[in-house]
Length: 282
Image (cartoon, rainbow, N blue to C red):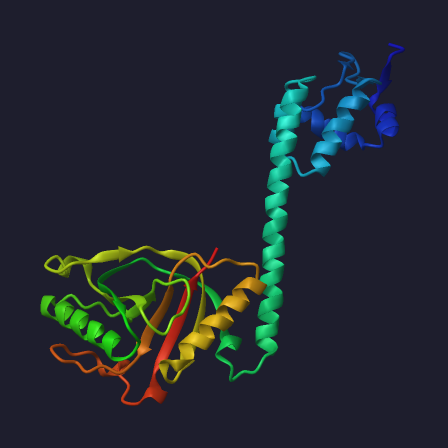
């Protein structure tokens, strides 16, 4: 019995509360070396202070009770212990990186909020985009303007003939990584109602769980400078572009040759246009 310490003595020696020792015993992390069957007193060996130190250190490092139980179940297995330490180190690194990214986004958002309210970038937001079934036409055009309008007119007419037009806004995908004035690789997309579009070519634009969105009013000449500003914002927020820029037309002009759109989405002048730029990020 001289090699054993009563629970209170062991608690004082290890600077751990009696309550904590009872909790560790109940969780099968550190059982008393001996329990007096008559009095119920719990006794610990001095050598168990080493085991307790491991438990305390693992808890301080963020290990769960279940994770610690797996470690103490294999006492002396240094390889296994180093493995779980490496796994936790990687998890903490990822968590820290996530917090750093959130902090960067917060700082960037703060600057946006404090900026000029007339600047569209002051309304930048992180949002998601749902999956959409679309009829699309992909092409390389020499310049923006009439060639893109012609693609939209053709796509809208095809969708109208099938009676498959969905209520969502049409959009343009810029497949080039850099914005160019000539030889632009583009794709016009008209959202469709899936079950009605069986007679025309369709594809699914996959959902985007995270993206940067900016809404602006006025003519489309703002797209290029806004895209550059968005890329700067994304870099400052420690995010990364992962997909083509979408120019989404919430209110726009259209010739409506061979189709008809609701008046609520149409604008007769460019200063009435409402456009959203959406860039997927990770």
